[in-house]
Amino acid sequence: MNHGIDDREGFAAFLLRLRGRGTVPKALIAAFEATPRRGFLAPHFHQIAWSDRMLPIECGEAIEGADMQAAVIAALAIEPSNRVLEIGTGSGYTAAVMSRLAARIVTIDRYKTLAEQAKQRFDALGISNAIARQADGSAGLPAEGPFDRIVAWAAFDSLPRFLLDQLSSGGIVIAPIGPEEGEQVLAKLTKVGSRFEREDIGLVRLQPILRSLAAVM
Image 1: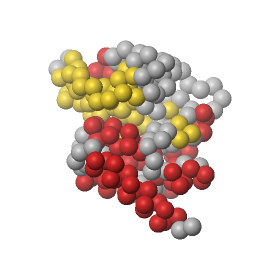
Image 2: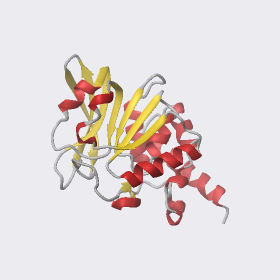
Image 3: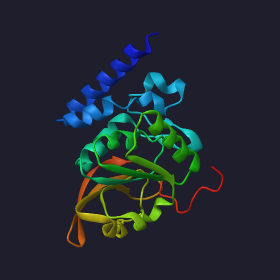
Image 4: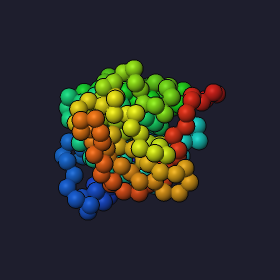
């Protein structure tokens, strides 16, 4: 089988689904196209790399479907000068995509294995403005703010007001908010003065944010 054709067809189907939901920024499409998704997945998932399914990765974690990742990155409205904090590196794929849109990405994960693998993938792709490291993301990254954008791939049980201090004025946080079990609301929080303006952009089912680092992995 010609994997190149297979991959292009998957990417084309992904684009059609995105366009069916509305306009897609050209820069976002270019960033996805420039980031080989298969390189972030186990070989047996390569054929369905561009599907909207969550797929398992190391450490018992999962990579979100391509459509959801695109919707979240589009909603972040990243500008070329932005510093972005990502809570939940996972495979490193979304950080790699965002690195093509922003000035600098800091991506953190509680699993050392995931942070190390993401680093290797960034190096292999020649990405120098994305930094992956192991850290407890449950409180953001207070020592390194302010950030212009913050995205969390794990759910907070209540509005993460503590992230206000880590955001620049007019900055945006996208995070799932809701109970551990069942659906959470994906909220877009824009910093206005000393408060958030909230816009809900969809329902998701993601893991709850865990405090502390993973002891073994």
